[in-house]
Structures are given as C-alpha cells and as structure tokens.
Length: 274
Image (cartoon, rainbow, N blue to C red; front, top):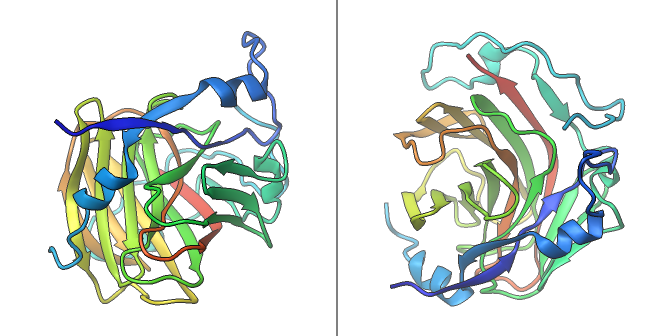
C-alpha cells in the first residue's frame, strides 16, 4: 500500500477577502485548519518517473461578470475559443494582489505571489511534489477553462498546469492537467481511492518546450467527458466520472528537476457550457 502524508492545501482567497457571515473562522484560522492528503514527494517522484511513456466576491473592473452559458460547439480539433465567443468569466490578473490576504502565500519550499500582472509560483527545492493554489469562490462544473502560463528556467520533467473540479478546499481531490518542460502533457486525478494517472506523459508538437516559453492550457470538461488542449490544439479526450460535480479551479507546480523552478499564470478564463 502506498504511504502518504499530509500536505498543506493552497488556495486563493476571494477578491473581497470576505467569508460568509455564518462562518466564524478568520482567514488565518481557515489556513491553519484546511489540509489535504497527498502522496509524499518520494512516492510522487517514483510514481511519475516515466518521461518516455506514451460565494460572489466584489470583483475588480478587470473581471468580466458571469454570463449565461455559451452554446456548445461541435467538438472537433479546432480551438474551442473560436466557437465559444466571449468568456463567462475572465481575469487578466492585472490586479492579482486581490487574490491574496497578504503579499504572498508559502507552503514548505513553494511560494505563490502576485507579480507583474500575474501570479508567480516558485519552488526553491526539487522533489517536494505537487503544490497547488485554488481559487476560493468560483465552482463551475461544465466549462471550457483556459490558462496562459509563462515558464522561466526549467528542464525535463518540471511540471505545471491547471487544477479543476476540486470539490472542496479540505481534501485536495481534483484533476491535474499539466505540461512538462520537455514538451509532454499528463492528466492525473486525486480522489478517495488515491492518486492515479489518466493520461501518461505524452509529447505533443503544439507544446512549446524549454525555458522562457509560454503555453496556453485548455480543458473542456462536460459531465464525464474531458478534452485537453495546448495552444489551441486538441491533444486527447477521455471519459472519467470520478469527479463529476462542480468544483474549484486553480494552478499547480511540481519542481522535479530544477531548484528555483518558476512559472507565472498570466490570465485565466472559463466558458460555461450546456
């Protein structure tokens, strides 16, 4: 049986930094009491070491208001944005500091902070495993979600990407769609049965590999149907109903090879779909 240890759940606070009036806990109390279970860094490294395997907040002006669900386009290999029109919600992160109660948030050796029109994550050490940051308020289910990431110095299997359909902020359950610095992509799932790989590390020409590059990650999630995109190009489709309800979304980083591995989320949007 795989052994696992507790790891701090990272999450982004509401833009207005407020909680429900029925909640008596302070923000600091919430941070101190909210924890999730994840595999240890050693177990994660062993598990994925196969690089060749195939609440409404007060919104700032730069956030678009929630709109009615967009019509569902024909699912082919085209960029979904071409058919979906304006996003239901978008944050260009020009005021990324609105997502933090203080200047930054640190878990072990990984720091998340607002930086130059985005949210930057830096892992000072390798082999610390996944570190993620969830948006507190929004919990959509059937969506196309897209995030633009900038990557600085990295190598090989350093990983980063989108988290989606996290049912709550307590247990860390979610889907993790990530890219590697070497130009691969993976889809992983953490739920009550443990951590599993839904899509093995697979290379794709549409992924910009190497250092000082940008990539746009997209996930189409409708009920049990999940489609993955990189820079507007279709990668793969799977069916999985393990996490089939609405959920939080956010970003993650996993410095597997490069101390000081840094990524920046430049903007994030989603489109509600019927």
